[in-house]
Amino acid sequence: ITRCPCAWLASPLPESLRLSSPGKAMLLALSSLATVSSQAAPPIPFEGLPGEFQRVVTQGRPGAAHTAVPGVVLTHTKGNSTLDSSTLLLDFEGSSSKPTRWEVDEASVPAWISVFPTSGVVPMGVDEGPLFTVGTSSMGVAERTEPYAAAVNVTLVSDAVGMTTIAVPILLIVAPATTVQHSMWGEARRRTDSIYDCVRPTSPPPPIELAVGAEHDVFFTACDSEGMRVSHMIPSEGLRVANELRHGGLVAQAGPQAFTVLVRDSASGAHDDMAVVYASDGRYKATVLAPLVGAHALLLLLDGALVDTRTII
Image (cartoon, rainbow, N blue to C red):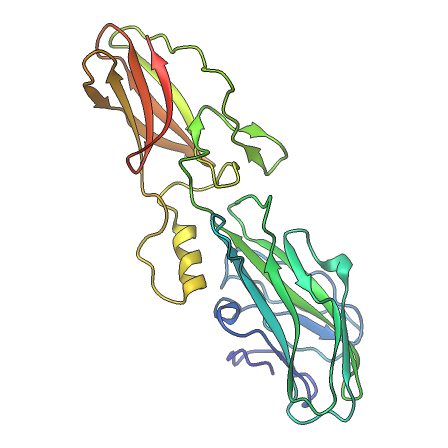
């Protein structure tokens, strides 16, 4: 079996060969299964969040060697220069009599991760050696409610196992923080089915005309550091969990905690709080009420910092 401490794992690899993925990656991979067989492994279906993976059954020839291998769980919180990564290790019980060669099927690597290197050799006589490092992509990965999931196919050739193909489960949790710089009044612009860009108008939008005492619904959008619409309501539970995984300890809260909408009288400076409710997918609705005649500013704040302004007349 692998180093994953799960009693219910499938049949083991040959005694001379074991795989592991150290550190945090193992924390959420305890219930995930990959497949090993002498034939290429099929894509691995994933459902649910970490800890809710479905058991994988290989579709290879009868009698093919099957086992579980640890998956790699990565987090991508954006907003900083440190990208998450994890290295898969090849572990021998004893010295191999010949080198073990391995190669990643690059066609199985999705765009949202990087794999380096994609081939190599574990020298003869080495008890343990790194294969490849899986890292998060740095740009253009949108948050979504389900983790990104894939299986990277790796072929190993050695005197101990012959030619063996392994499908390594990869899970990416994208949990960015909402930012003051890109959040805005109005709706984000659709780029693809899963990506919405937060683009502020280049010129001031027309004022919102309100009768005294009349209510008006105004929408605003929460956006990440890349100017992409987020998919969570703040405070973000996903961001808190991602920080726990990355830093290896309990995190009480992470990221911004609350939006506030104020209507401020332009003459007196007096202001009133407006009701805010979460709509969906990083969208919020503010119910705006103009209490007095005259010009007012409609202020959007994130944890007290000014995000965006509209004018009410």
